[in-house]
Image (cartoon, rainbow, N blue to C red; front, side, top):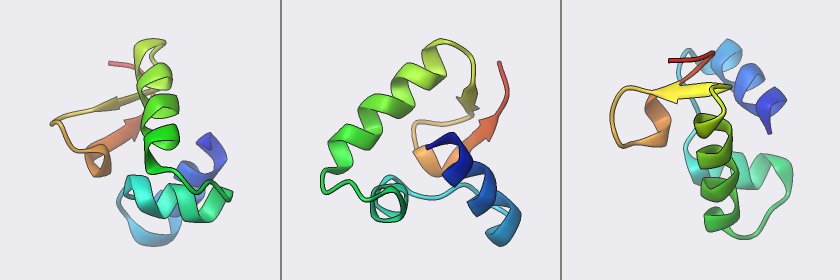
Length: 61
């Protein structure tokens, strides 16, 4: 999932949406993606500036 986000940012200049991540990694449930994103945010792998996942950035707070 992290690779997906990294590649998407490189290609599009912004983070992917939860649905875009789900489609790219082959998950049918956006809630599964959101759960994994929250886990990555909690350990500092990604961060976001507002409540939308499209605002996520790689790296810690």
